[in-house]
Length: 222
Image (tube, rainbow, N blue to C red; front, side, top):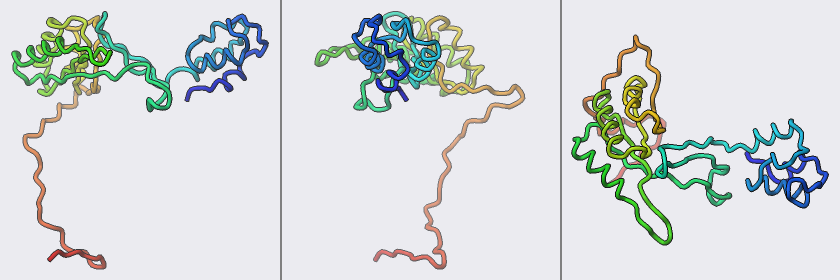
């Protein structure tokens, strides 16, 4: 949890020297709590206080930047769970899912629609922020083809590559090296462990009601 201004004030020298640019140490502490100042602005603070403030003032979730250039988006680095508690510093990232089982023409059309999705509304600039490329097939070749297509049509655009098999994901990542994609869901799989087969059908459940248990009330309808 982030430190309050009073808690930060207790770690400062309390000399009111004004070297930080603020009239008092308390005023400086309040600015630190609001993330409007840096602890480095105080030349007299101890190394222990710097270390404590650095650890405690760090956001619970580290910032993660996806993509390159002007299309890049940043997530995380929030100090609160709910926006009404304080504020969110990074807006929610919206992504459109494309499965690697989709025909290439459909996938290409979806990418084009995402790239043309920008609009202005009530003074806000809105757009689809990322592409969520899902390894629905469970195989490496379809995911590689989809990632390659996205990299060619939208270079530097934020990509979220979803694959549970780390080896499958690593092969696809070769097409977007240096573009800062986000890898989601990949797990290490021992070489001796075979891939789990995909289910061929959903399990069906019987609709026959359970027999009444002794000692329990049962409800009946006319």
